[in-house]
Image (tube, rainbow, N blue to C red):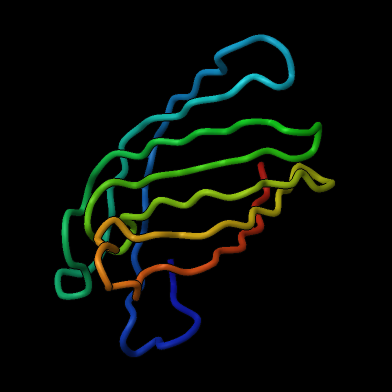
Amino acid sequence: MAPLKHRTSDHTYALFYSNLSKKMTAGNFGPRFTAGPYAVAAGRDSWTGARAGALLGYEQPIHAKAQVVAVWYSGQNQVGYLTPGISFALPGKSFLIAGYSVGNDSYGNDRSNRFPVVRYKIRL
């Protein structure tokens, strides 16, 4: 990931992950669970916390072109967040995902790492 804003204070890093997923029931509206490991490649002084961990995901279709999604990355670091949201299927194997991220160390009165998220993804 490369920052678009605050380029002098935020650093570029690469996130690598692998996962396995399982659809629990037959049909179009069964839930899917995902699990796997992740690892981060970043400069020594630009990263705090663990550089590897687990990810868990959940998808629940609610319409032919919409589903409720949630992804959790373990760790109290720059990627350690729970992000629930809604994913909308778009033409051309693309998706628009809108959600809200809550950092794993976001408890008590510290709400500095909670924010809305909008992502556009293309499946190759």
